[in-house]
Image (cartoon, rainbow, N blue to C red):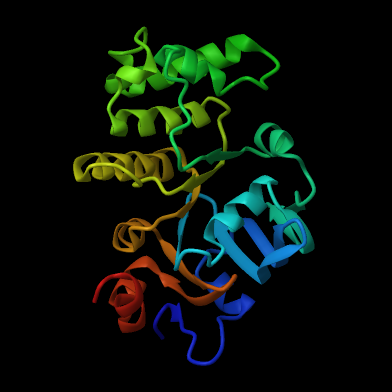
Length: 261
């Protein structure tokens, strides 16, 4: 049987979605209805992703992709349902609690670096809620050791960085808290192709070598599905099609709607 579950009249069921992850499910969303104010954007939404697995959310504007990231992180009103990490419910935790106690980091889509602060100072801002500042310094040093592009500019203001280097800094700043889950909103937005490749290589390294669980929203559906283990196609706040990334790339419905096929 093909590892994809298609909408032909009905959305994939919770059991179908679970089959796309291993038995070691790290983060799960169960029957979630959420939105902003009184407006419900997500309707009875389910999601399952394992440790060190990547999941890409694609779909038209307004489908609810970013709302899923916002809900996981604590930026929405949750009307019903729950979010769990390793079986522990985290639905009602604040964003700071989610970052500090259960290791969920959110990387925003619009440039969020502090342009007049140095690269090193920007990195240290990632640990602003750590109890011990020396921990932040240690993590920042490890990051600078790993990424030469940032190391060479550590004492320069972040405004001198290229678009791709800024995105690298945003991702790296989130790593200072040593998260287990990275929520990444539009990593390729506004970047030249060579930097898009660089950003996805970095995310791939974090998933494979540092065992990060990655949930990303990506307008460039082809790039996102090529990268991710699992893809969910969202339509009107619900999952219409789900499958592994390669399967969805070959799906004619996905191709027609999102890949220009």
